[in-house]
Length: 221
Image (cartoon, rainbow, N blue to C red; front, side, top):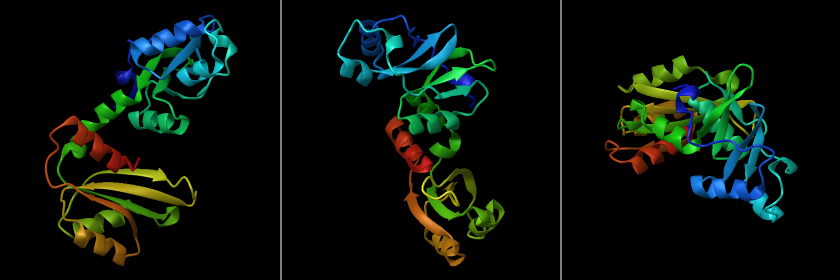
């Protein structure tokens, strides 16, 4: 799903000329911890509830703050996984959306993104999840797929991301169509793959909390 389809138009931006009282009031009404700041259609960054409360001056203008997350934006065509990554990197609950000219289009909330992602059929399907760690030069999805399919198992989806602590390594998360992971783990380990985590799901996901939990396992967040 692309970012444009997730824009939440009910959350308006603040302007630099707005005061802190207005910022706090909007955050309280919208139940948000951050709000975007936009001037002349350009995204300037975000002001947070924490910043305003620490300043303790309701008359201070938004433009007087050192805004956070100034680069926390995606373009309309980017994938929702980019939204999750930016939200995690900057420690915020919202990500701005801009067009090709970097004009502000709206914001996407992390909550809306996770809900959308959790609806994917691979996430909802019963089965297990494996998280593998390996050197980037050793990564071969074709080989991993072959080893898994030799155990009469299919890969439903995959997610690859760099190891934040070691740029020479990466993590691969795979969702499988079986909850019995023992033989697959043994096969992968026999061929030198490091299994960082395994999650076995034995039933279909029936509520939002279950989908959220399995999504977090899938993304290894």
